[in-house]
Image (cartoon, rainbow, N blue to C red):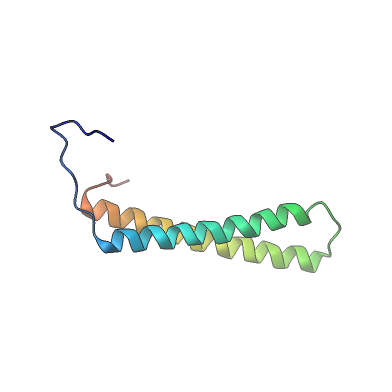
Length: 84
């Protein structure tokens, strides 16, 4: 990737990679569970099973959102992203 001469590189740190990795893992966990839920939705399940999956989907989504927010906030601290 060629950068224009007037563009300065912004400092990144090892924690940037840790935050990205954490967010990526959380998204993957949620995506895997969601794919399973989609597959299972094609068959009959009890209300208890549906509620259990709903709770797990809610939890993994919230974990992914929190990890993504932490990653974004870290990048804002570095000046890589603008505050929302």
